[in-house]
Image (cartoon, rainbow, N blue to C red; front, side, top):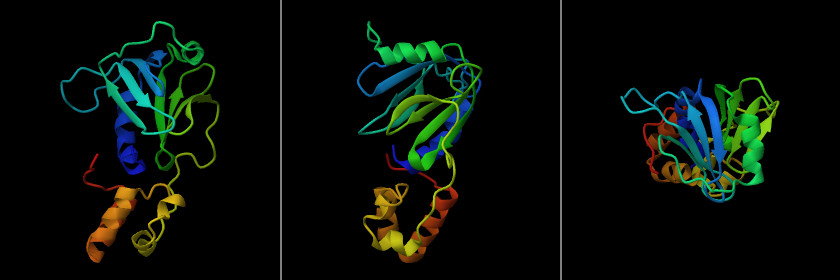
Length: 194
């Protein structure tokens, strides 16, 4: 999941997860996690059943997060990390969700217990924290339009300038590309190719 898509997903995740009670966490396969939820809201205004799990993939490779009513098969012998997290997360409420979209991190603000935040980080994985790093949730610096159009390696210094975004800015007619880039900076995108 690229940073710009994650940016748009964060409000939906926050609305869905806030108020939910945490259940068991499991690691169905290497790099994958499933976190049980009770009392989560439906992701949209439909009559769909509320999600019962937050599923995700973290670490090297493709990052994703989604909610679902379906439980995966949990391994019969949970790893030590699952047991450690279960002890610290079970029966706690999610009071809110904070996103750091350029770094693809989600911090769930938790009710009383060890660790004020449960942090889901695309690169470094799952952790509990009492405080969030400086700059967490802040807006990134945006390079100027011309730099995005001409520098194919701009993503190395500005990770939120994803390859697809750079390609769109480089291939659209200049005025349309400039308007598109400004809309992305404001968070007003109309769709995604995933």
